[in-house]
Image (cartoon, rainbow, N blue to C red):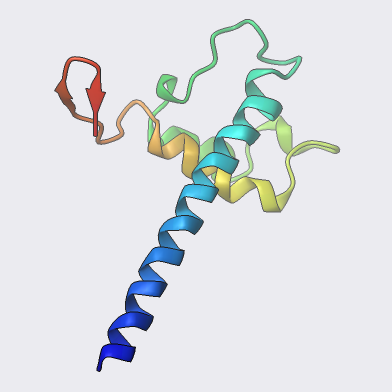
Length: 102
């Protein structure tokens, strides 16, 4: 039983590490491919400018011209979309106090 619990805890730990890595990767992809790109540089692009549904339509459904060669790869699409939706205008961030967000 103890071994089973240890394996479950290990799975939860590794899953948490993977999700943190994906979020960081999505942020890096956003910064390099979107924010610092020639298309949006200096225009104040932010994930919070659109809702999750709008990001899904644009990035998830491949409607943005970034998918033209040599734009965004399929491997970059998932982490980027996760980052954008987690930080979208309608995300569930709630203020906990001054300078603190959950």
